[in-house]
Image (cartoon, rainbow, N blue to C red):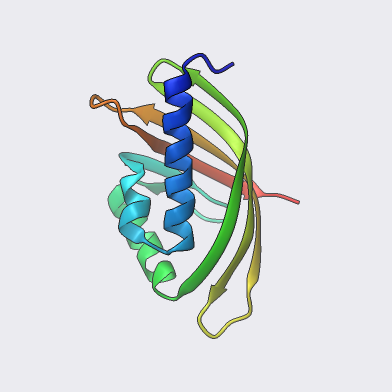
Length: 130
């Protein structure tokens, strides 16, 4: 159960910023929403550890991609300086010269509030959805 309305609103803003970053393929905006020690676990790939590794992974993809996603939070639980959210992500990605690929995922984001009070994503985990 969510106990902190201001945390809920701040986390919703982080999620919207994440969606905006993906849809505009803005690497820096995307990375700004992650902690320095972010852990990304996607389908069929080794975990990506840290913001620098995330930049290396995402930059070449975003350089040649057009992405349109929608994300829907299904549940959010806030506890102190951490929060866990799960939801769905639907849309498509088109790499230059290729056909669009549908995106249908379930996601889990773990958020952490830093010493300045800002919430960021510390863990991004996704699995194929329907």
